[in-house]
Image 1 (tube, rainbow, N blue to C red):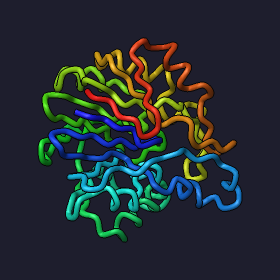
Image 2: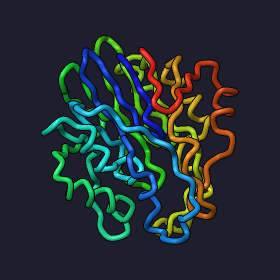
Image 3: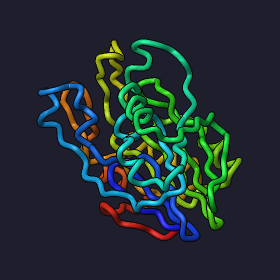
Image 4: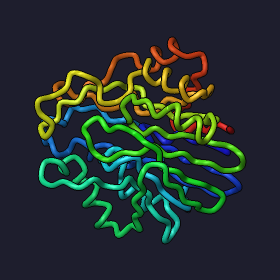
Length: 261
């Protein structure tokens, strides 16, 4: 199995000559476009395009930096499905955080399939399983376990810390690699008030602990060194350095770099 980091949370996984992608991002500037001029100076992460022809695209959740319709269209083979978390209803402000990505995915006429946690599907040589995750703003989110060629890679999206780690490891065994979000961002979005002072994404020390509870000895950091906007999206400083201080098992990939698992 070959794992390639596409920047931010985007990942391409190859096995037996076939590929799937998770959370690819092409238009990073669209994520905070709803803020208008206020977002003009917001830094954006660098990304690279996945290889076309993927058998499936997975999104961990429908926030715009994880569900980019243009990136998915470019990545997927004709007719390939997009796998996403099952919704939990609601209306109005409850759905505001996912409205942009949802509308763009619908307009792209992608074949979307919703999955509840602990459910799986087979695509080519891959078994793809949605697993529990906790979103920082309460929107539906899953992690994705990708199995092929006797290897297991777990993509954690931008989940908060939780304690399903033991159950995941018991049911599937320790993953051979876990892709961990590490920027520990504090979120102050207008549709989620009063704001929480706690990080809405795992910070580096939490990411290291999650990998330990999963019994995984290969941590690949994702979801860091990108967006930062005072009063809206404030990442923890020195995320990668803190992760390497917290764990001896970090494998940091450069943009577009791949590793054989």
